[in-house]
Image 1 (tube, rainbow, N blue to C red):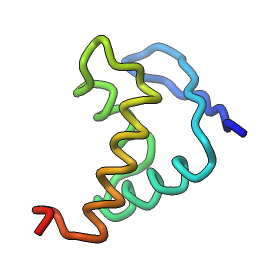
Image 2: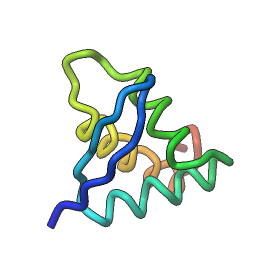
Image 3: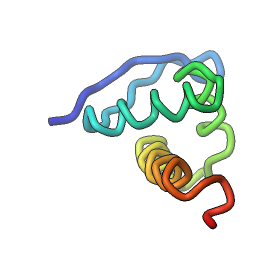
Amino acid sequence: MLEKRSLALSGHRTSVALEPEFWTALAALATARGQTLAALIAATDAARAPDRPLASALRVLALAGAREMVTGPTGA
């Protein structure tokens, strides 16, 4: 089941629906990076390609973050 969260990005209200496991992974990644979840999402939104949906970009970020936690920042 998807969990929808509302937030403000670049001064506009929006909502993002992700599985709870992705929200948990993103929160852990934000903590590991010393950021708030809102700051992590805002940075992801600013950096994503215009044709990539925010939910997709956040799922990819969660996957990359999980890999980073397992293998280290360089993937070694």
